Structure formats: structure tokens, C-alpha cells
Image 1 (cartoon, rainbow, N blue to C red):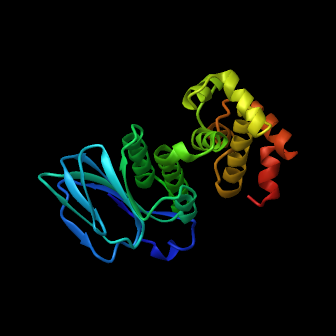
Image 2 (cartoon, rainbow, N blue to C red):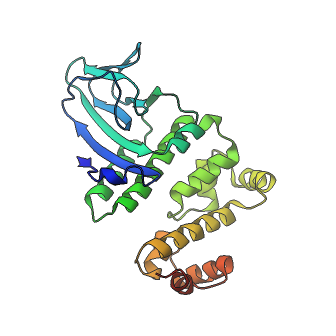
Length: 257
């Protein structure tokens, strides 16, 4: 289990990962006044009864509930129940963007167990509250996209996918497959809706992430290049200079790092 104890920072960052863990067995919970944090909770094994106000849901493995902060809630098991949960503060802008209601039921996306395990590894590693905030925000964005993406314009779905996977060795075919289309249709729609190719958009996102790492971390330029999807340091430097008019090291020096 992970728990963030520095509560004085809860309102200082746009997203704070508060707790992450699992309950096996899950005890009965009754919160008539709601909880201090937003919460995702889902079932790994067993069945449970979850409520939101006067609505009740019987959930089984692979199903879960989301509750906004302060929403009355309760849940109980109908036998032995194994749950996994993540709670956080902030990110109201993300929730509102997807028009997320005060509470909703969801089916667990296939990637969620692995993504949550990776997030927990970050939490228990040599991390800072800022790095946990960034990792948690990315986790939330990918999950919300998976749950609500049917209502999001194609160009925004693409942007979110690239934002969440910018550090991976993506090809045009990889991106097209994830977007449920072919490379020719993908390029045509990007040109029509954004006036920029998918790979150029990916490059700009990677360089933007690199600027953040250069300003707010002490990692080497070579490390940052790899973190942002550039295997070659010279190619990273070339692309960075094209976008910013200076080398990564010059950028870091200019910003006082």
C-alpha cells in the first residue's frame, strides 16, 4: 500500500496521488458524508454491493466504481471480496472535461492492472511527490480516455494517446492501429483537423516533455532524450534545436538548472 502523508501539498499541485493499494478481504464501508479524495475502486475477485446515494450496483470481477470527493458511498461484499483502489486529489479539470458524473460504474480496461502496478512501483521507488503527481496524472488520463473516449473527437483522442505513449518507439502503423484506422486515413484526418502529421505531432510532444525534464529534474541530457523516445543523443539534440533554437544543455543553463 502507498499513502501520501504530506497533506500540506494537497492543494499545491494540480494532481496528488493520495493512496494506492488493495484490500483482501475488503471490509464493509459506509461513508454517508463521502470521502476526502476522488476514488477508483474495482474488483479483482468476488462480488460486492456498491451504492451511490440511493442507487446500488452489484459488481463482479473486472468491474468497478468511481466516486468524486464528498459523494456519499458504501460498499459491502457478498462473500470474500478482493478490491484494488486508487485515490487522489485535484484533477477536477480532467473529470469535468470528460463530463464525469459524481459517481459511475465502469468496466476495467485490459491495461489497468499493469498500469496500476507500474504506478505503484513508481510510488515505492525513489520518487518525489512531483514525479508521483506526473505518473498519477498520466494514469488517470489514460483510464478516463478508455472509459469515455467514444465521446471525444478523433483529433483529441490522438493527442491523448500520444501524450500517454510519447516515450514508446511508435511508428505510424502503431499509431494507426491504436486509433482503429489505417496509416493513410490517419494522415489524411490529421492534415484536415490539425494541419500536422501524426509523427510531427509526436515529435512536438516529445520535445515539450523534454523541456519539462530539463527544467525540473537533474537527469542528464542523454537520459532525458531516451525518456522522451529519442534513442540517438545526436538526433535528440538536432530535433530539440529545431524546435527551440538552442541545444538541450543551453536550454537548461538558460533556465537556471
